[in-house]
Amino acid sequence: MAVIVLIVVMDITIINVALNPIQLSLGASNAELQWSLDTYLITFAAFIFTGGVCADRFGRKKVLVAGLLIFGIASTLAAYAADVESLILWRAVMGVGAAVIPTVTLAVIMATFPPPERPKAIATWAAAAGVAFAVGPILGGVLLESFWWGSIFLINAPLVLISVVLIALWVPESRSPMKSRFDPLGVVLSIVAIGLLVYGIVVGGEDNEWLSLPVLGSIVAGLALIAVLVLVESRMASPSLDVKLLRSSRFSAGTATIALCFFALIGAIFVIQFYYQAVRGYSPMQAGLLMLPMGVGTVLTSARSPKLAARFGPRTVVAAGAVVMALSFVLTAVMDRQTGVWLLIVAQLLFGIGWGCIMAPATGSLMSVVPLPKAGAGQAVTQTARQVAGALGVAVIGSVLGSVYRSSLGDAVDVLPAGLRDEAGDSIGGTLRAIASAGLPDGGASLVDAGMQAYLTGMRAAMIVAIVVVLAAAVISLRWLPKQLPPPPMPPAPPAPPATSADQPQSVAAKPVG
Image (tube, rainbow, N blue to C red; front, side, top):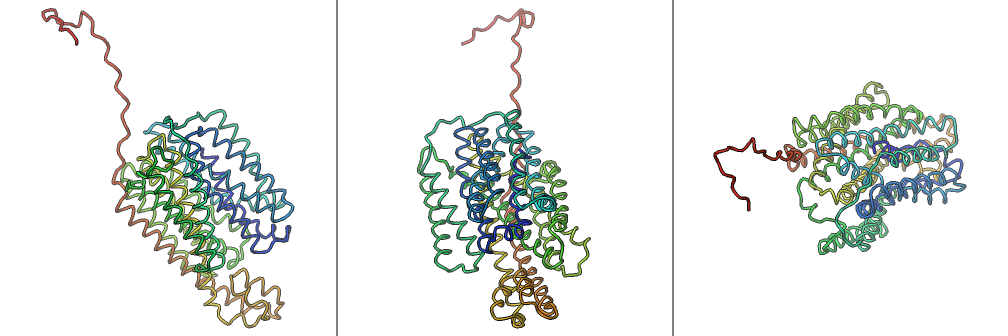
């Protein structure tokens, strides 16, 4: 299960290092390139709940294999896409297959491992997901040094085949024992509602026009349909979404804590990658290697989080992890163009240590109130909230970064021809491209310096947002997560052996039973 979730989560970050080769090879515009990223996120988020519901009803092993095969086939077709439209299409299909994986892998763990072993299994699963964020850019850089851009997608095919074989050999089938009617209305409502919500968030973050009709209309329609979904499911005898879970403070607090920290995590990675490559001038491979301490920190704390949670309680461990993440963002906020590499490594290590303290204990806490028959649907709620939060993280933190960048850059772009000024004011990448296109005599040194300083100012503002969000997660965990998880149920005592005549007192007559 850990290997499988690593493959899918890794695909979220591996494409970032291949954007430039894809653009050059397929002649994609910036908008088309952005959609190759966004369609995956939208379909991923939209189909998470459906995957969990179908797994509980039709069998988790079957649905897991089906999702992996969809993901693997679409990855292969994306690798050989002849134009950007085909790439966008197959990325969307990849998202549909990938949506099944995080939800169903955890449901399989819940159904397979007995309660005393679950914390360790969940910790391993969470560690793999954390490592994937660091492994993706590194693997992408290695592949692009020797192969074409399609190799970052093609690598999924053999990994998927290996995973399917492992599932066939070792994963037992499990499903909900409750016989209930399939809920097509709930499934359709969840797909449309989450799809509209994430679409609005993604487009709003790209264009920074949150009040435009397409953006605001999509977000409002998505939220309205989510409210309809909750209302409809609350009145059904056998709902796909168990609304009673949302009333549990442990479930809601665990979900909110993970979502808020994921908001900050994805947004921070987005900002830090541009800092590494555009401001510090590192190659994609070097930038990926600088993310490796985050993976190391995640593995170290995830592996120890069950013992930490047992000793200090989920509340304390999760809150401490959020505070450590905030400390990492403070270090990032004070970085400049000459910051020593050692500080970059320390900040990433703290980033991973904090995240490793959050994911496994919070997941274990919220899943402790989910009935095993509803493990897939229960985890789907958390994963959906997490993906929506991730999309919000990139959109909101990216919008803050862009707004501060534009205002800080000001009229420094006036040294460029009028036709290039709008592009230069959008982002640090746009500024550097505009300078290269203009062919300024001095290489645009003054504008480069202004752009770098404007990006650092925007990065500080973005990190302040991330700090506030993770500290809010710490407050929620301290207020509503449990001090201690309930002890796992003890196995039933073996039946006592039947008494023999030698064991009976001879002076007492046997009493009749009845």
